[in-house]
Every structure is written in structure tokens, then in C-alpha cells.
Amino acid sequence: MKVYISADMEGIAGVSHWDDVTFDSPTYEPSREELMREVVAACEGAIAAGAMELIVKDAHDTARNLLADRLPEPAQLIRGWSGHPYSMVQELDASFDALVCIGYHSPAGSGAHPLAHTLTTDIRQLRLNGQVLSEFHLVALTAATEGVPVVFVAGDAALCRLVQTYEARIFTVATSAGAGESTVSIHPDRVVQQIRLAVEEAVSQAHRMPIHDVSGPFVLEVDYKHPPDAYRNSFYPGAVLQSEVTVVVETQTWFDVLRSLQFIS
Image (cartoon, rainbow, N blue to C red; front, side, top):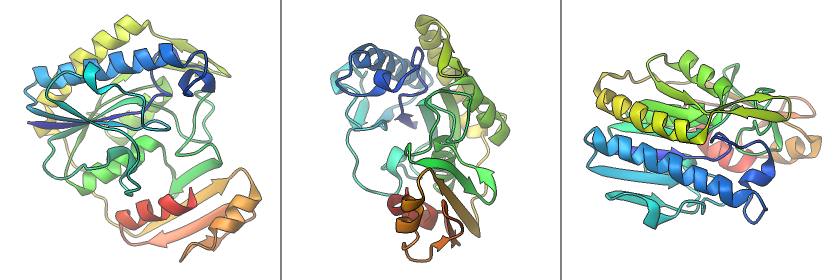
């Protein structure tokens, strides 16, 4: 069995401020340690379920947060950004049996977590065919195009509710809940324990998980916080400046949605 683990950081236990997830800030190292613990727990759960191959993608900010020597064998670590449109699930393909997401968070425009965003803090909201997109949705739809099911997601409580709306059979662990600019976090030790147990169960049931249809056409709408960003990005081929802050791209394939986001997000 082959399992892919994508690891973000804003949705881990204990995070409440951008300093917590920004390299070289005073509170970064404790958060980095928690990220390592949650990712290792996911790896251990996958291995316990029979995974013989593990790919872990460091998918936060610089993508140089995870430490390779802390991961259990046989995990391999992808650090840095290649520039490929698959981004947070770089190298994911049909050979994988399951996708696991750690540290994911609520989307841009949400008040459910103080660090809610989608791809960049310059975006006010991202929508696909009228539905709000989170980074979870981006990787889930990408996985679906490869025939790989998302089986587990850990992140803030509101994001976990969105995951359940997308697919009720995905296992989730809520690490915290947002309240204004604060978070109420589950104890990190309990989160780690829950992740390990839930990932083991989720991966063992991967063969039962459905694959969502990802057929076009697609209408991608990007609302920016700053009008100049919308104006500049409207010159992407096929993009239309719908309002002072909104750019729209229409396409037939999911890969073209991802390709456009490489340039207009």
C-alpha cells in the first residue's frame, strides 16, 4: 500500500497567530515541533494500516519545515516548491492508495479561524462554480483526477465540517476551534493520539472510499483584497476582470484551473 501525506501548518494544535507559523519568529519552533509530532503520528498510523511506501509533502510556506530524520521509515520527504501546478500534492499520481492531510485550515473569507486563507493572504475568497474553495478542496479534487481518495484530514473544527460536507466518509480530527483572533485548542498529546488511531483506521478503509467526479466546465472566481492585484492578474490568458476586485477564468479541465492558480493567486 502506498500513502501520500500533505502537511500544512496553520491547522495544527496550538496555533493562533501568524508568528506561530513563520520561520524565525519567536513562537515558530514550538509549532514546528507540533507539526512534526502530528505528521509522525500520521505516518505511524499509515504504517500500522499496512503502508509500505510513504511520501510526505511539506506544504507550508517555504516548504522547509519538516525534518527528514524525524520521519519513520519508509517515509520520503518532499521539501521546497517545484512550481508544478499540483503544488501541495506534488508527485501525487494514480499509484497511491490514499491521501492524508495534516494541519489544514479554513478557507479565505472564513471567520472560523484567525489564520483562514486560501493559497495566499492576498485573496479574499476563491470560488469554483459558485462554491467556496479551501486548500483542502484543491488537493481533494486534484487527488480525484488521479483516482486517489482523501481518507483523513486534521485541521480546525470549521474546516473539518467542510470536509464532512464534501465527503462524509472522510475521517477527521479537529485540532482547534477559532473564536475571533483566538483559538481554543485540543491538548496536543490528545491530538497526536487521535491522528495516529484515525489515520490507521482511515487508510485501512481506503479501498471503500469513493472517488469524486471532477469533470468540467469550471468557472473559477478569485476575489482579491487589493484592486491592483485583480487588474494585473486579469491579463492571464482567458481571464476576465469581472469587477474591481474579481477575476474570472473559465476552463474545461481541472488541470487548467490549477495551472491558472499558479499565475493569478
